[in-house]
Image (cartoon, rainbow, N blue to C red; front, side, top):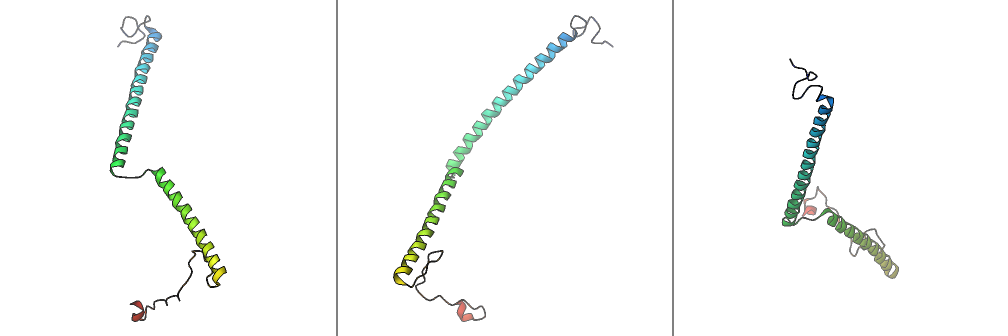
Length: 127
């Protein structure tokens, strides 16, 4: 058996010694680092290509972006709140002028008598 510390081998010997082994591992680390940077670059390119394809698919399917949906929902929420507030004000003004209507949360003013509830035991009320 040959030992790496014995003289005379291509990888061993006192001439090559520990300095040679350190340089080998430095070279190996450099190659590995280069491979990792190439893989990271490839990953970034793949992510960009996939993102581009997804955006094309979203446009073809006529989908909406989350930010646009959130903005539309916020506009609808504000409009609903304003509509409710205005309905309450109108009902209050009608009550003040006519003395009949009372403001309600939904702003509905009853103009006719409420319909009787359906009686499940009476078939005529279900029609």
